[in-house]
Amino acid sequence: MHEMKLQPEYYDFILNGTKRIEIRLNDEKRRQIKIGDTIKFLKEPELTESFKVKVIDLLRYDTFEDMFKDFDISVLADISMTKEELISVLEEFYPKEKQKLYGVLGIKLELI
Image 1 (cartoon, rainbow, N blue to C red):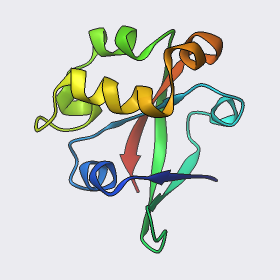
Image 2: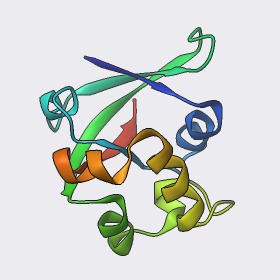
Image 3: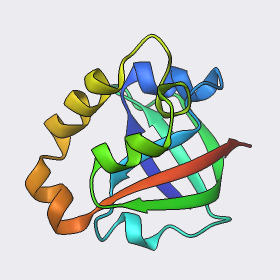
């Protein structure tokens, strides 16, 4: 089982069923994830709330922009956001240099 932290907004998007692809840098930690694995998401900042998902697919891309060409915002976050807003948030955590170094990963999820 893998564990990942999520900001409250994105935690809720997964729970309410709009966000069906979690987006991360494809670093060493994420390369350990396989289809069929379980991920436990912890809600920041307290980390007292959690839920589990099953990994149903892994999508590898060079950059977030490349991934966003193939998917609508309605499965990447929620229609209350634009793709540009989401890319801006992601790049705060994962700058373009890190995207080029590791690539990015879309983790297709199914709530357990």
